[in-house]
Length: 507
Image 1 (cartoon, rainbow, N blue to C red):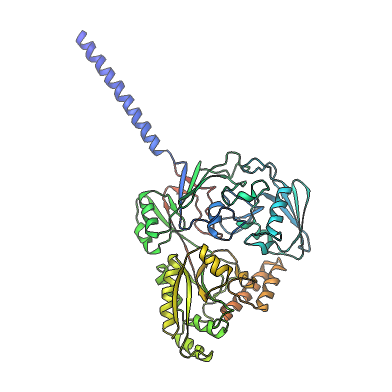
Image 2: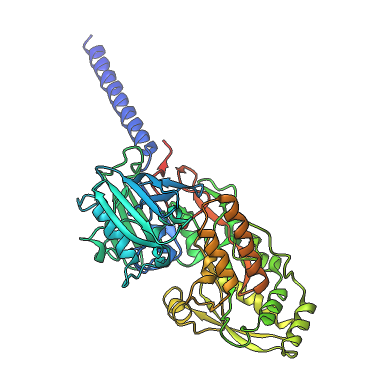
């Protein structure tokens, strides 16, 4: 009996140990299976600052817009205007008075309350004489900002602005408050679902969940997020394969997309964007001041070759500064289709029977370098010699091209949605001046009738297609690569962004 008791006790202890071990194993499995609460997002370009109201590069908004900063309105994933810090609005019959009802109980990350006085500060700052807002012109129609009470904001306009609600949803229109506004370039403070934590220059920006976010339904589902900056496409692919980043919403190497097919943990997602790749010409500089030269160069370009060679067949050719996603889009690629013989004849008519030479300032990004090399070969076929000068983007390009207009030709992907109006800006780096085009844009803003606006956008597209102030090449798709268990990222990009409020991991 004693031996049996000893054996039974030993067996009992063994059984208990096995159960404990099994429980520990199950706990470990459960711990492994638990969804992550943070995310690492890869980006090719590091922003030069973190205040989208102070500088134009889209990378700023891709980190901060809808994550840290919010506006009176916002643009949703379908490109539609939605209420945000303004919960509703009324527009007067003459289209010149906008009355906004602001949301109550909204605070900035530093505890300052958002109200009409703060909104007035933000808008006056954007439209003031010393404003550095990259979209300052969009506020030019505002004559006065009134604050009848803390929850009511009234904008008085000089003339109707049919796109005002849309513009107010842009990164450049986000709400900032007086105490922190001057420091937003390095330590941004907004009202959004994430708070700024740290910026390790050259490496990453870290955000954390805002526990006091005003919108319970729209609160962040993640506890933390990190944006990692990896310029080299091969390094981007390696970081994804190694799991060092969870997602690259804009993967920079289309030729490597096939390497992720049937991947165990990663998936590829191809969406659309507003990224219009154009080779801008200095219309104020000879020979590009001659419309015939610009038209000839357009006919020297085989857009399908550009798409295949520069972006591995991913992309949609365009004939004007407009994308198929935009309302009122018309296909203008047939206005000056690829025809090298006609191009040579037109160059001869313009006084260049033996061609000419010039330099293109091309940013270091892969699409710009590859496209430039193909353009170089295509232009050579019509007797035109083009030298390629690699120009660091954004700093050097902004200084030389955007600000100084010191260039012959350049190439860049314009990311702002519905930005056909850039050809009416004075000054702007194209140095294109056409009163008829400007008149069409003025008529667009003078009406709020969508059908009339779309017809006028069609007129604007046609003018640009015929005048060729830039070589209109193609629209880049959004090539996304991310973890299969990561949900909530935007497939398409109606506005440059990495909105994280709905991002979460599968359980």
